[in-house]
Image (cartoon, rainbow, N blue to C red; front, side, top):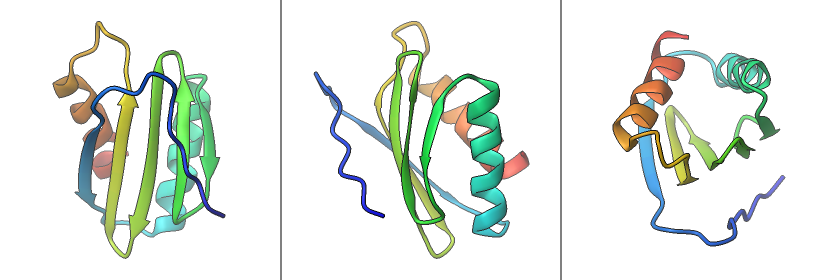
Length: 94
């Protein structure tokens, strides 16, 4: 599966890289559940995918034990620091 996701009116994206400590399958399953709980679309597999909804547009790529999430769009009222904190909490603590 290949995703070449470029959102409309893209501003400068921000990438977050994290070392994962769990099995990729478990991480993706957990991320899909979290996205569903927040009403977001999550399309992808254990290698790459996209996440969108409610003003959020991002993609992810997993290579070995490094997860890279690139956020293309976020709600204006949410700071980049908050976005990064939430991503880290999800990936590192569940």
